[in-house]
Length: 242
Image 1 (cartoon, rainbow, N blue to C red):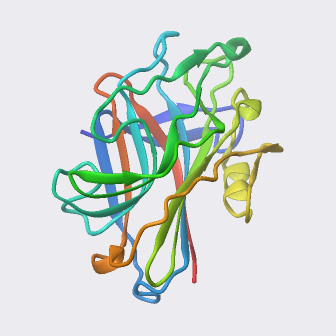
Image 2: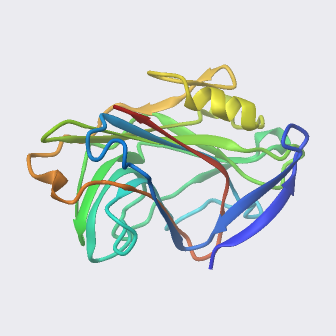
C-alpha cells in the first residue's frame, strides 16, 4: 500500500513529505466541472525521486503519468476504460532498464530511447515512436538529497488526443529541483528549463483516431510498477489549458 514519509532537504521545504509507491497505482479525479471535456491541454508535473537501490541498475520497471477515465479501471487495469499519457517501459510488463550514475556522490538514473506517448483501452495499447531524448531521475541517498521534475502533457481536439512528455535532463540531475523551481519549470510554456537546463522532450507524440473520447479523460493516473524499489512523489501540479 502507498506510504506517506518525510525527507530532510537543504532547500525549501527543508522537511518535505512524500507519497511512496511500490508496485502501485495512484488515481485522483479532477474537478473539470467548469470545462467538461472542452480543454485543449492538461499538463501533469511531478516532483519525484527513486529510492536508493544501493548503486544497482533498475530493471523490469514501468512508470506511467497521464490521465484516465474515472478511478475504477485506470491504466494498469486489464479493463482500462480509457487512458492516455507518457510511459517509460513496456506497459504490458516487459523489461525496461534504467542505468545508475554515481553523479559525484549524488546518484541518479538515466536512459535514452525509452519513453513515448501512449493510449490504452482494456489490455490493448497503442504507442508512438519511442522518444530519443535522455531523461534523468535523481535517487535518494546522495550527499545532497534531491527532487526531480517530470511531466506528461495530453493535448486534444474534437477527434484526436496527443499524449507525450518531458523530463529533467542529466545536466540538472545532481542538483535539487526544490519546490520554487519545480513550480517555475511547470508553468513555462513550450520546452521548459529545469534548474537552467533545457528539459528532455519526447517530441514523437501519438496521434489517435476519431472516437477516442467516448470515455473522457478526467482523472490523474500514476503507475509505478516495481516490486522492489519505491517511487517518491513530493509534489504534483496539474495545469489546464482551454
